[in-house]
Length: 417
Image 1 (tube, helix red, strand yellow):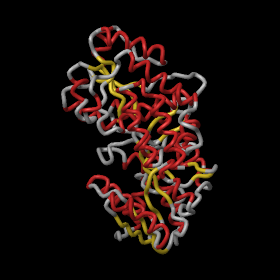
Image 2 (cartoon, rainbow, N blue to C red; image 1 turned 45 degrees about the vertical axis):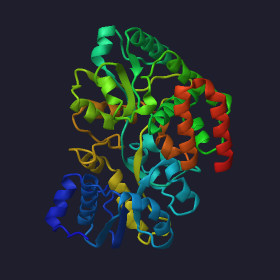
Image 3 (cartoon, rainbow, N blue to C red; image 1 turned 90 degrees about the vertical axis):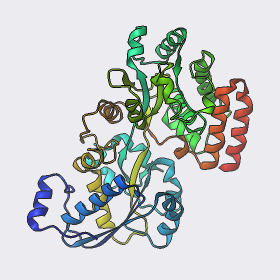
Image 4 (spheres, rainbow, N blue to C red; image 1 turned 135 degrees about the vertical axis):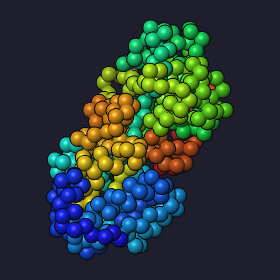
């Protein structure tokens, strides 16, 4: 529970942008469950609850923070038996089981309000199942290509914008004695990132999600085309050798030492690259290039979300909390100053003065009309994801095994779905 502010303090909160747009008169108790158990995210969650509590004198906010791993095992039980009014979770297929089971509230009415519809549009597809929206996002982070700007300059290369330019750049990099890309696929998920981008750029976001839902065979010719594009980089020795023996962190030195020029990775890689000596004069970023001009650009941007359980008791206050956390000012506050170290989803928010955050925010807010995916092992069922990512790693090492790999994945698809 949180102490109430005085009237004067509440007025100050209004002027500093902590208020939700409607400032509805709310009563009773608002129960919030969160898995933000690490110290910095927990402080953010406690601040959100306290700020919202302060804005509503007749409402009591009760926040319960649960260890993240325990939360994963408990969520279905508490949504079914003793639900809070608000719970945080993840977008897209990760929320699918709870939508299908009738455990999340339809909040499509919120997405008809301009403040949400206009400013959170980049993630609407990730919040949509069966044509309805089931929550709101509050933070995400970009994936893309981080590269050695100084090596590009040395070789006379420019940032590529399409696949032909990507391949031409890669050939010049290989000819210089370097690998185009570092990657550590020991723990498999990094290969999943490559499949995500190649498949979304080859076949589009909708197809990628159909595959994630088990609606497309892995032996489909469109999937084969994704692997054919991938093989172009493999056959030209575009990736560092023996990547299957490295974790993602163990693959960083190849880029730091100049043995590879780029890394397809999430923004969390920036800090260790900087700490290893790559300052911003040497390090830059570009959006994964267009492959098929007939499909819109979609991105991997793992998105954290808030939902209203279908059996919540105080849905009016819960809806007001979702409006609050979706607002530009609140998302600016919780994603700035190292609080979450990620990006606000609201396109009217601002970000810290960091070139990678700024580029990521611009890309996700303005240049990703095709949709936002959550990353392979979030979007696909666990068993499917595990076997598929093993197959991706195998393909990168022995590309001639593609037929066997796809047949194996297709067999698993038929079992899983």
